[in-house]
Image 1 (cartoon, rainbow, N blue to C red):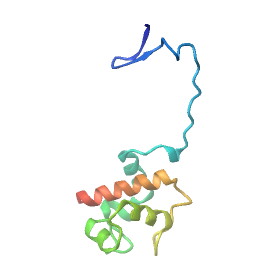
Image 2: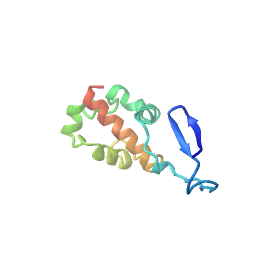
Image 3: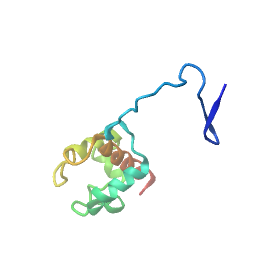
Length: 119
């Protein structure tokens, strides 16, 4: 049995059924990949922070991203936050035409986590 080393902690068995066979690469769209928390933070910085720096709201003070306000206004869950980002409401524009679902999800998860940790 021959084993090729891909990295110090991972080996690939090149003997057996797969020896000599080619595998087609799998193509993924941006919606297929779950963005990391840092992606959510980066997207928040570029897309949201102008109005919502540190979880605030420069347009309407009471509509901030702090946990208490989020819960009071019906946005205490990630899904509700994602829907708000996608559809917009009042002075907040919709982002469904500017961001992918994965990007909206990443921002929503980041906002939710930040609201729980107090920004």
